[in-house]
Image (cartoon, rainbow, N blue to C red):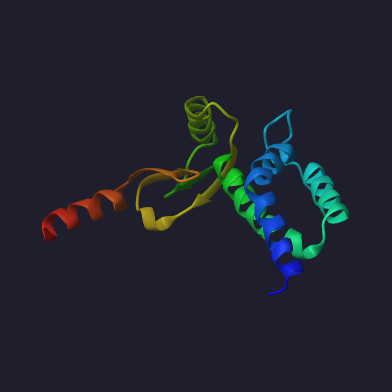
Amino acid sequence: MNDSDTNKKRVSQSLTPALVPRLVALSLDPANGFVSAERLRAILDTLAQRHRPAVLKPLLKAFQTALRREILRREIHIEHAGTLPALTMEQLTTFFEKKYSRRLAQVVSPNPALFAGLRVRIGDDLYEASASATLEKLAAALAA
């Protein structure tokens, strides 16, 4: 590795830790707190104009990871067995928006493997009230 490659690596490594959280914050729409496609496009265009691809690659990888994490933090994934009334989904979303102090985008999907009940995921947090979870706990207790 020559001095030029070493300098590129040093520049890209010094940019990444400080810049990624700022880029994520800049990509959020101040009106609703969700990632904005227009703001994201402007950020990427600006980065492409100011930095060479060799410098951008590690920065963009870190930015992508942080952005995915931020998107998942702002989504409520509701899985349910059977039918779930729209009012119940709205009540769940409202409850968790108050709990997390932020707006959440609803992602709803049926999951027959739950047997009965539901599973809610927000970021890394999982809340489950389903027959399958209860049966799994019972099977684990009996196996012990």
